[in-house]
Structures are given as structure tokens and as C-alpha cells.
Length: 202
Length: 358
Image (cartoon, rainbow over all chains, first blue to last red; front, top):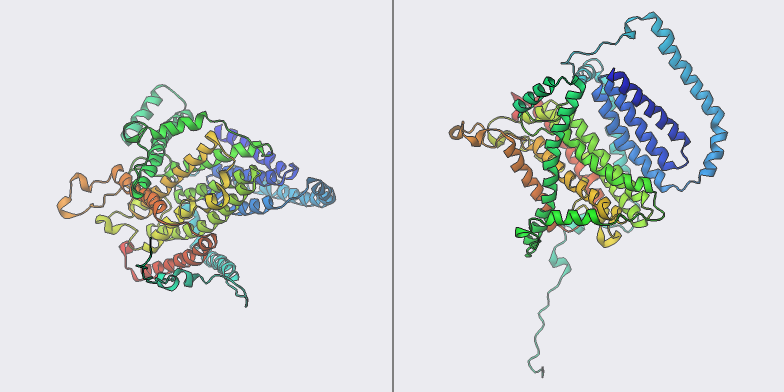
């Protein structure tokens, strides 16, 4: 009873925030509605006992991707009127796309589930079940090559992004950081012994 | 502790409450047991900071309010609560007030999975380490929204700096934790601590993972926007950074969140690298069986206070980093160090050297 109450609450907020993403006039509000939508879908995943995926969804999408999104959106100064024009222009395309997605979902959920009876009744997992362990067992045995390949590609992307900042253009005046760090006081300061003037009347 | 909760559970069952409500009541009680001492610690952490930096700079620090100035945090709190919260005319009112609340809630929410001793943790979940990473990464929203909603150039600059810095150091932090979960073989914080049990403090992860330990703690300092990485509120350039428009208790919430985050980072460093609640003398022959070798919450508190002290010590000692140096340290120094050390750890695994070889 409580589970279905939570499910409908989370789903309602999810749908409302998804609508808010496209309906709100302020771009920052749109981005924040998207954050809310991600968090709510993480909640839905928690309800089907997939806590690892739920936490990773929050970690990756809310904690990293959306921060960068927000970062960019805040720096843009987009007039909401021009957005309205675009909205009407792209509306038919969007409707077509969502129609295709709805047909696919109906196809999978409705027609496919007619053949398989067991999927209609998902069983609660036993108390010892750990989503993290189950995923790990699957990832590191059955899909180990695909998984490691994906990991290497991601690492490569990080290394590539960092190395992009390491290019040097000739004639550019930038600080030489190692030289700055290694500087000694003798390089910068010269202590000169000035003889005091004994004849001064002061 | 577990015994007390068991009895409490029995008591609630006696009243005939339905199980979900019973569970909620118990969780709220547990959360209060954590949060109220945490608030008091935050209050006295601010006092400790002013007193300690005072001593380091050959001053006395606060000493007027109460015995040795011990009532100073409460005087500050009352002052902040009574002050007016000024709303800038062109600020986005809703987000302006939401930002400090977000920043404080995320700082508190991470405490849900912190194990304080073997049998006391609010939520003993399997993906605890990931949960901590996820919740602490949400803290940046408070800062970014505050900077944007204030509609002020200084606040916006501060928020931009802060967001870039937190995103950069999060990667190094995550990589350092990959080393920890390789060594412990678990994402559960309690299991990570138990994986460090053995003979004395030499079995803690800080020795085999020493570079990762340093990277983690320094990234933690950068993540909480503390000196020497506090450019997000660099008062010499951008007044007070992201909270320049905030006053009264709205500023107070940011302040509270920052200190709660510092305590959190200290607790996490202890749990990941310094054996959590385990005793540094466990398994030493002639201390066997004495209270010195028994694991309990006191050890966690003691180790945490060392790292909390380090936060204050850094602030009194180091000059502020330049912004490009912060970025360079995060991307070009810390991330390569962590990646290399994860490789070294893999080799150690294969060669079966190190505390995890058994």
C-alpha cells in the first residue's frame, strides 16, 4: 500500500517536473526541473530495489552533468520570446518523436507482456539481496570485456580533455609555474649593506 | 547502543504502531541523536576556529562572552537570528531563499550513512560510499543557485569559481575512493572500516594508499571551499563571493553548512583511511584487553578532531592559491597521481603484497 502510494507520488512529481522543463519560461527553472525529474526517477529505481543504479543516476546526472548544464545556462542571456517562436516551430517534430516513443513503449509493455506471464508479477527480492553485488557479479563476469572497454574509453576521454589544455602556442605570455614554485629568495631579493653616515647631523 | 534501539523498537511495537510508522519514528530518533550533537559541534567548531587562529597569530580570540568566551557561538547565533534577511530587489526570491536551505540539507543528509561505531549507523546501506559521493556533489547547487539568484556580479563570479572547483576536485576525490573500495572490496562504509582491522594503526589504509589519502583530504579541503582554496569567497577580489548578498540567518545557514561539511570530510577521511572507530593500539600484545585496544566511538571522535584541527591550521598557515593554480593542482597533479596509484595498487594486488593479501 505504502509502496504504491510512494510510486504514484514520485511519478506525479516526475511528470509535473518533466512538463515544467519544457513549459517554464526561465531557462534556469527548466534546468532545475530537469534535476527534479532525475531525482524522482532515481526514487522510482529505489522502489524497484535498484539502489546502486539510483545512486549512480543522482551522482552522474544530478551531481555532474546538470551542474555543467546549469553553469552554461546561467551564462546565457536568452530572451523567452525567441524561445517561444522556436517552440512553435519545432512542435510538430517533437510531437512526431514522442508519438514514436509512445508507440514503442506501448508495444513493449502491452503486446510483449501478453506472451510472458511471469513479468506481470515482480517478486520482492529476499533480504540478503544486494543490487550492488548482483550488478558487480554480472558486470565482471558476463560483460567484463564490454565493461572494461567502456571504462578505458571514458578514461581516454578524461585524458584527452586534460591534454587539450596542455597545448602551447608560441609567443604566448604565460606564467612558468615550476619556475614560480621553485623560486628562492636569493633570486628575487638582493640585500645591500648600506654604510651608515656618521657625519649626519641627525 | 544497538541494545537500546532494540528495546526502543520493542517499546514502539508494544504501543501497537504499524511497522512503517514504527520504523520512521526510530529513524527520526536516530537522526536526532546524530544531528543535535552535530549542531553543537558546529557551534563550538566556529569557536575553536577563532580561538585557535587567535593563538596561532598571538592573539587571545573571543574571551568576553562567558567563561573563556565559551558562550560566543550562542551570542553569534542569536545575533544572526535576530538580524533582518535582506532580499535584494532584483533577486529571484524563491531561489535566493532555497539556496542556503539546499546547501545545509545536503551537508546534513550525508551523515545518514556515516557509521559512528560498530552498531550505530542510521542507514546501513550497501552503496554507502556512492551515496556519500552523490549527496556531497549536490552541495554545489546551493552555491551556484545563490550566486545566480542574487543577481549580483560578485556573487555570480564566486558561484562560477566554486562550481568549476568542486567539479574538478570531485574527480580526484572519486578516483581516490576507487583505491579505497579496491582495497576493502566493499561500498559499505562499515565494511570499509572493518577491512582495516588488524594489528595496530599499521593496518589502516592510509599507509598502503598514502598518496590517495593525501589527495582525498586536500580535495576535501578544496571541496568545502576552505582556505587555501577559498577563492569562491575570496574577500580580496570579490568581496564575499557567492554569499555577498546574504544576511541574517540566510547567511547563517551557509555558514552552518560549510562547517558541517568540514566535519563530514574529517569523518569520511577517518573512515576511509584511518580505521574509523578502530583503536590504533588494537592487537598490540601488552595492551590486549585494556580499554586502549577496544574499538569505540571515542577513537573516531579523536581522529576526526585531528583532521578538523588541520582545517583550521591550514587556514592560519597557508596563503590563498591563485585560481589557475587551483585548477592546475586538481586536473594536472591530483588526477594523474590517483590514476598512477590505482595502477600501483593493482600491481600490489597481483603480487599479493600489502594488508589485503590474506
